[in-house]
Length: 260
Ligand SMILES: [Zn+2]
Ligand SMILES: [Zn+2]
Image (cartoon, rainbow, N blue to C red; front, side):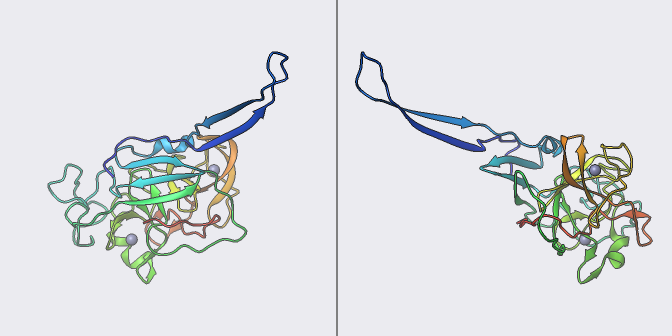
C-alpha cells in the first residue's frame, strides 16, 4: 500500500496472427508474419480525483484495481492527539466519539476493490450490507445508512464534522463528507459495483438532479464523462435529525464486488 503512484498497465493485449502469402515472382516462399499489437488502455478520468498518497489505481485486463490505505487524507478528531491531522471535535463531542483512534488502533485498514472497467447495470438491484460499500477519494471508506444491527440513529452523534467515525473497525463516512464535498457536484468516490458517486449536485445541469432512481442514480454526463453514464448522487434527503445527508443507502444498481 505504500506504492504512491498510479500505475497504468496494459488493459488488453491483442494478438493478431496472420499469414501473408507472397505472390511475388521473385519468391515462391510464403511469408509468415506475426504482428503483436499492445493496446494501452486508459483509466476513467474520475480516478484522477482519488488521493494518490492513499490510493493506488490501475488497470488489470478488463478491470480496474483500487487499492487504498483506508486512511482519510483530511482532518478529523478520530486521529490521535499528536497526529498532524488531528482537530478537536466540534459537531461531535469527545464523550460521544467511539473509543479508538485511526492511527493508534494497530489495525491494517488497507484493502482492495476490483471492479469492471466498464460496469453495467444489473438486471436486479442488490441491498447493501454492513461494512464498506465503497471507497472515497480521500482514501477512507463509504458505508451505508446502518450501524451495527440497526439504524444509524443511535450512533449518529459519534459522527465527526465530515460524517465519519470509527465503528468499530475502519474510519468511514455515513453522511455527506464535508471535508471534500459540501452541497456540490464533486466526486465522492466509487461504489463497489463500479459506479461513481457524486455530491448532491450534478455537473450535467449544474444543480440538484431531479431524475434520480431509488438508489440516487441516473444516467447523464459528468465532469469526468462527455458521454452519458450511470452514476450515483448523494440524495437530497435529510437523514433523521442530523440535518445532514446519507451518502448511500442502496440498493446497488450494479453487481457489488468485495472490498477486502
Ligand atoms: Zn459507522
Ligand atoms: Zn448526475
